[in-house]
Length: 187
Image 1 (cartoon, rainbow, N blue to C red):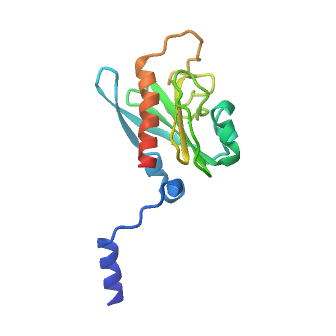
Image 2: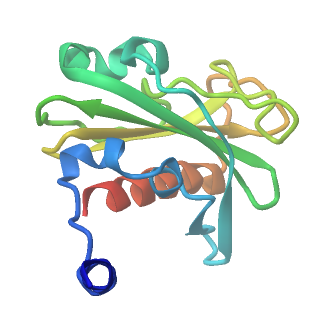
Image 3: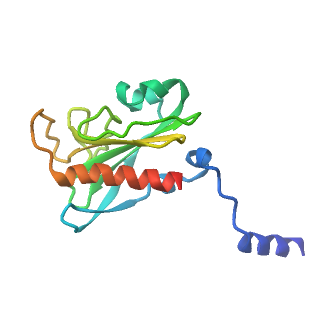
């Protein structure tokens, strides 16, 4: 009788939702970094960003450029990173999540800010993505326990050159991936 009652309760009673500050540990990696992230191009066309790979957990100084999270390093528990490619495999975006031990205040950045270090994954569109290739990025945060930053560039491995124009689709990719992951983690 108790087995049946336990089963019925587990089916009808929802599992407790972990507090926001513990979601990075309680949720499976596929919920933190979903297989796809929906978006739109600047012209309004639908775009899908497809997961290229998830990097192992790292210390913040190894996963982020110093200026991006230096004030938070003493409070940064771990850094999580994954790289996405747009459905045409033209653009790649590494998203980094800094998990903090205490809430912090964040500045929102855009352009080519100090951000997460790109994570390359062999055998796919992100194979040649590194620090020299990121062109633009976004740093998002809130008075919470997470900082989400992106570094975006071209899948063909071209290096960033100061003064080169940034494609609006690339800028949109960086912002949309950061916003989507931050929203999912903090709502």
